[in-house]
Length: 241
Image (tube, rainbow, N blue to C red; front, side, top):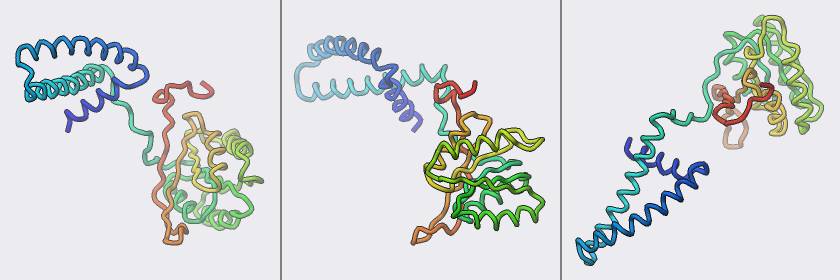
């Protein structure tokens, strides 16, 4: 299995855009050398079908071996590509939640409850009642609850500005990294707008996957998953840096 991974990694490296031109030059050179070697082997072994097949098999092994060697040489000085940045979030002091259904909201609050001090619930007219019920429970447990009203859940700019305003006016003692955004609720457009406000690595984001019944109604929710934005991995400059 390890050898197979090396071969696959080598083939991927040989066919990346950065390596494509050198790969083509090398392929042409190998083809020329291959023709010479093929003629030499034929002169030594003859032209029988079995000999031709053996030569083809040897050629295939040479390609696979080259890919494996390429992988070993390149990866010796270069770490393996990181996996997509998903991880269980650590409980935060602050939580911003896009509110749609009570199930995902309750799970997000419960997950962070051991550290949670402040919770901002982003609501529309349709989700206000869900947030009001959660607000009562939060305050009974000594936590601060706030409602952030959105006029248009299909306006990503409004959503982005509302989330940015929360971060711009955090209570004393809270750093941006202490407050995590849960973008699970509302519309996809609203989720995009909220994430646009968190494009620097100091503002963590998460989503809380819902579980549905046969009628596609949310009946439960899984633990949140934090998305780590690694700009170094993406090869771009972090906004604001």
